[in-house]
Amino acid sequence: MSPEGPFPGRRPKQLRSDEYMQLQRLVKGHAGLHLSSKKRQEVELKLAQWLRPGLNGAGLLADLARSPERLQELAEELTVGETYFYRNRPHFKALRTHVIPTLIRDAGAHRKLSFWSAGCATGEEPYSLAMLLDQHFPMLDRWSIHIRGSDLNRQFLERARQAVYSRWSLRSLEPELVERYFTRTNSYDPSSDYSHQLVAKLKRRVTVAEHNLTVDLDPPNLPPGGFDLVLCRNVLIYFDRPDSDRVITRLIGALRPGGYLFVGHVDSYPALGALDAEYKCGTFYYRKPTCPKPHRTSETQLIPGLAVRSVPPGATTTGGAVAPPKKRSTQRHLTPKRTTTPPAEEQTEDALNRARVQANTGQAAAALTSLQRLAERSGRLDHRVHFLRALVADQAGLRAQAQQSLRQALFLKRDFVVAHYFKGVVAERSQDWSVAQRCFQNAHELLQARFPDEVLEETGGLTAGRLHEILDQRLRFLRTEMETR
Ligand SMILES: C[S@@+](CC[C@H](N)C(=O)[O-])C[C@H]1O[C@@H](n2cnc3c(N)ncnc32)[C@H](O)[C@@H]1O
Image (cartoon, rainbow, N blue to C red; front, side):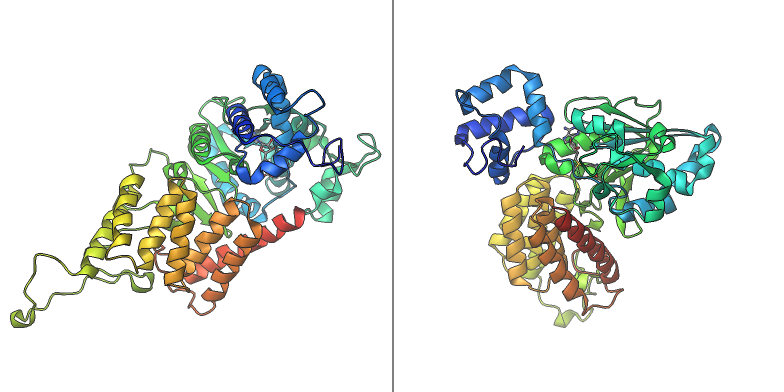
């Protein structure tokens, strides 16, 4: 089907705004997919083939509301199955060098490992895992290994079962791996490029099943005790924030204590706060603590890897490093008489600290109110106030407010590195690839003037060197995404 539907060249029939909203509700309820207004044109293009003479928007919506099967078909039409073998190399490097060796050590005598690729599309992700195990951990041949893939889209799952791939899917594999793990075939679809059949040994290791992450409570074949590793990469971006958090909470529930969770680059959600973030091989991933974490009171991860810490009273955060509180003068006669109203600077520091504590303990509304007051009074010219406001607003799902506060923070301090970085993270999450690239490049350039061990302002300890690594990785990821779209 042409991307314009059955009538190429013709503008697709439009849904009225209320109809589009109804469609949004139906699709969200069925599959969690968040059809933002930005995607409206793209969605309507896909819908063109569903609207035929005699079936207008209202008729189609009535059909969809009546028939879960039709709704499933539409959800399948709207899902994006972009994937390829060894997508996001740093993840696979971290799996090879840290995660799998730890899991093997933990498994000890029982010699069993269970993996789940949630939102596996056409199977490249779970098969990449099988490939990695075969390549680097041959002793696992004698273990009981189960890799499960699941997806909402039945057509994708059927292709995963066939395990016949195009060159495009293999684009990031070295020729030796293609040689070792694929045989040439023409049987699947001789007219297309689908000519690489995965070898039986890897195919056997993976089973796939239909599963809807936003609706089905239990994962497919949940092993007793939970999975050792769950991959749910590049899936959550299609959901809205509350649904993503709900899904993450379920994924965490499906992990055994000590198990690992990998989400996509751009996926950063409050629910991940229940896990320990690890940063290895230039990438973040998460581990479920062996005993539940106490409610965070001292720090939170509003941006992956970046904590926002409260600062001891009287300390300053110049350049990011927390300087100890200044000693009060012992010379009584020089000490100004303490007034009942502290100076504006002190008020700002105290109020900022209060807001940080509120943000860190999940009291987003209270933090926003404190910051709003600050932004109207003593802190209006303080870039940190606006930045913290952006972080908390983003965490609370208030995207427009987050973006406005970020703009203000950057207006007040043009070389505020972490604000450029965070602006890029937000843009990346909305798939504004070129904006994200520009922001990351700005941050990258600003870092050239910093020493690698310099702690960056408002990052809770992140050094310039480390952010440099993160930016390199994110820019590489963006280049790949932009090339493949
Ligand atoms: C872009 S692909 C990601 C594939 C793979 N995880 C990767 O990173 O390469 C997103 C997949 O999520 C699936 N998906 C979207 N909504 C889902 C839902 N509610 N439940 C399960 N899978 C879903 C889509 O069908 C699609 O196959």
